[in-house]
Structures are given as C-alpha cells and as structure tokens.
Image (tube, rainbow over all chains, first blue to last red; front, side):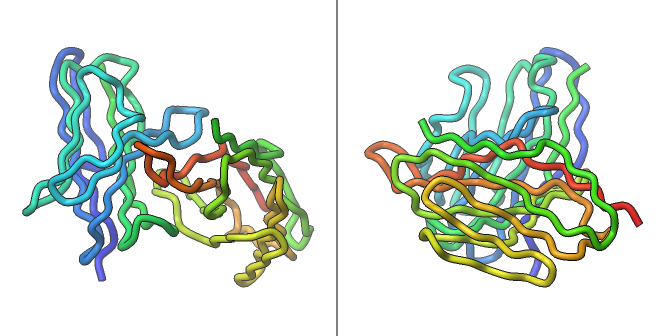
Length: 113
Length: 114
C-alpha cells in the first residue's frame, strides 16, 4: 500500500507567484489534514477536509491560502502571491476515521525567494 | 487553548544510556495523546496513541506512559538509529465548529552517540 504521496518534494517560488501543493491520501482514507512546520516551530494545523468539503479551516490564514479535496484527484493546498514568510515545510496527513493517528506524507518544502 | 510542551528540547545520550522524554499538556478534554518520530527531511512517523491515564504502550526500545497532565517516552538502551526528533501531540474532543485536529509540541531532538 502506498502511503501519503505529496508532490513536489521541493518547490521554489518568487515572491508574488502562486504555489500549488498536492497530496494523495492513503487509498481508502477520506480525511485529509494539512499542517505547516516553520523552522524551530512545531507542526501547526491548517485545514481539515473530507471529499468535496472543508470541515475546519481555523488554522488557515484568511488571505491567499485555500485548500480543496475534490471528488476525484488529490487534495490541493494553494498559496497565492507568496511571500518570504510562507517558506516552510507543508505536510499532508490522512486517516480513515476522524480520530486516531494519522499517516503523514514526506512534505513539500516551499522556498520563496 | 490546548497546549503541549516538550522537554528537553534536545538530548544527547550514549548508546545504551536509558532516559525519558517529557510531554506536558493542557487540553479541554483529551481524546488521545500521540507520539511521532520525525527524521530529518521526512514526515512524522506514527509511534503510539494513549487514551487514558495509566495506559502504557511499548514498541521495541520505546515505552510510552500517560498521566492526567503529562506523558513520558522512555527509551531503554538506545541505539544510534533511534536518533530523531520525537513529537508529542494531543487531540481533544470536538467542540462545536471545530475538529479533532492534533496540537503538537515542538519536539525533542534525540541524538544517540555510538
């Protein structure tokens, strides 16, 4: 069984560009979470999605950030007009149930130059 | 607000030197406490879930315990391959409008020297 697949592994964007991060959950998992890890900081919750629904986006910045988990295809975290402060590792996790231990992907490391 | 504090921030051990990592937490209603291991450049790898005070779980050289205020990750006779950052996280029961997201501590970076 493949785990959580995230791509790209590394992404470099210039300030003002858009970043698109993709996450394919474990097969059969319908719950997807996105977390951000800044240097010297812990993992911070961003958003929780089920198929075609955003359940909790309380950790998402109000502007420039959006997420989706369509009926078909991967979950997408989109960051518009990136700034240097967006540089971080973004991790996706999935689970078969709403509670319990997640399976994390290897992350996308975003660098804004 | 749910909070998790891990100590120490970093720990250096000699191979075979047993020790413990601490995770102190405050949470509105604990649904579960989780331990993860994270290697450099990788995502967190699930180790244990603990649900109630007094519960213990073991895996190879690792043993996790839970009280009402903290959890310990005991490492017995560690090996260099146990070197990693160990993350603790809590999951609270859902509040209206929220979700059972994980709240993580900053981690303890463990280095085991041969």
